[in-house]
Image (cartoon, rainbow, N blue to C red):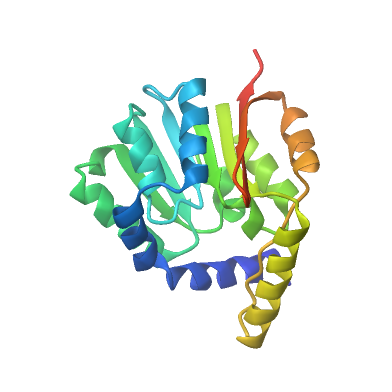
Amino acid sequence: MSCCTHANAAGRFFSFFAKRYRKRFQKKGLEPCQHQLVEGLKRAGIKNTKLLEIGCGVGYLHQCLLEDGAAYALGIDLSEKMLSEAKQWAKDKNMGACTAYRLGDFLDIADTVEKADITILDKVVCCYPDANGLLHAALDKTRNTIALTYPRNRWYIRSVMKLAGVFLWLLRCPFRSYVHDPKQIEQWITAQGFRKTYQNKTLVWLTQVYSKMT
């Protein structure tokens, strides 16, 4: 499957969950791994920063960071319905002036995206077959800090991913999730002049924050 085909499939897949994502956050708040991500970013420094969230979904993560002191956020997502929810939520929170949203595959539009102080990829690396290309494009747009959550490379997670792939195949849905090697991901990021400043994990997710070495 080409990356373009996969991106289109991912956009349709996540559009189905747009309203559910918003309702879940309203009821339960941030997920444990997102609390970890926010903690790592606060340690790195978020005051008056410009954020770029790739795969922003309904927007609540970067909107929380704006409430905590970030200055501006650009959210990019493949799902028009996700962005519709994000825009409405930003409007409801009077964040229209400090947020912007773009529809599309980040790898397709990266050349037209301005650099940000902080780049966020929350549960996005696992949605791309080309993790190398995605991370290098994201790093190219990052001035100071990049934060990401992605699946831990464990047998039980790989097994669930395989079962999910079979289920999606039966439904004739071409979207798939991927478990990428954390050691390789770290090598890609540190090779671009970043060092790991924070790491934490849950049963499923690995959370990492990297800052550019000065």
